[in-house]
Image 1 (tube, rainbow over the protein chains, first blue to last red):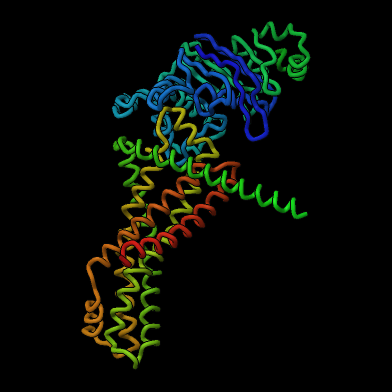
Image 2 (image 1 turned 90 degrees about the vertical axis):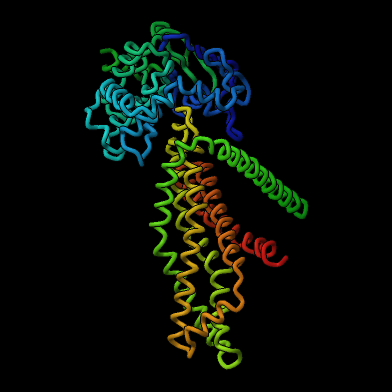
Length: 250
Length: 263
């Protein structure tokens, strides 16, 4: 379980998070919605300890991330797969080596037979052709890079998956492919997922529960149905554009 | 007006002090991370070998070329200034001493501050702004053992090695140049070179190169690691890394000369 209690975060004079309480239960897929620049990615980075809160607690599996020693934090991170917005693939390595880095168990990482098998499996899970492993990130399209990023995130068989804008910058067809992939991975791997997105359509398709972040605070958390029925002005305002979009209704 | 000027000066001084203290703190953590990461030999060893090859093979030509010209100019100027006033064998003394004690290590370090330092700062800076370093951390892996230690250790090995080759190139070039323009025989040059020669001079040259290597690689990696604000930040980190390590090389040169030669 992931719990964030009373998270405050400032960068210089700018308050990004202002007392956020957020929980994700085991096996759940939660989409964190909000307009650009409201601190969604910052909140996600708190979960894996890439950013520390000024005030508040981040508890994953009962462990307070901020109080963990380096080794314990590394061990906890090995259970969390993080999909970065732009893939964050290592330019100097081919896809094989990139995904291999996701094998977080050091003994398995050193076992080339295991690594080959695991990488093939991950590449298949994200619907990429097997020969992708020999390519370098610069030779891949945006959608393929995102999928390699997902393959790397799942290579260590994580318990949690955190997606940072997995469909941003993609055309609708590729965005649908990624959404379907997220849904399928959640079903097949049984992981607990948090997806940061401003794509309402994708969030409704994939998530069990939604949370809307606005001006550093969580405005609402609830099921997609509860969001649709909400009278909250900020929720209505955020959803309105997509309600009017015929593709959303479909 | 005077009051506002005073306040401005206080603000500027305060900001510098805070920034300086911030850098000291971050650099200390950065070094601590490196020391901790040293135990992960399996991670940094293969990467260090690749970096060492890149530094050595990539920098050899330019290092030899510049030290050869430095040796030639030193020899020719020595000949010009001292012809008729002192014995010719002194040219050998001056060329060997100048190259080994000063020009070899310092010129090599300044060239490599531009070549290696800029590259490391830009590489790591780009990795920082494209979240590649965050990705490593998110995978529970140490960026120090994957990225910093291989670069720093490769520099600590290869920069002194390149300095030794630069010294040889400078001395040989000076020797050939002086023979071409002055009536100096090989025997004169060798006699002069050996007359004031102390084995400590060679150690001193390598020790200096080792310290310069540390300042180039650590400053460049630190700057790259702490890059912010996209492409502009990468440019700023790269420039700051080269300028800072160049100044530090000159400061270290003075301090080490005082400590190691003027006891």
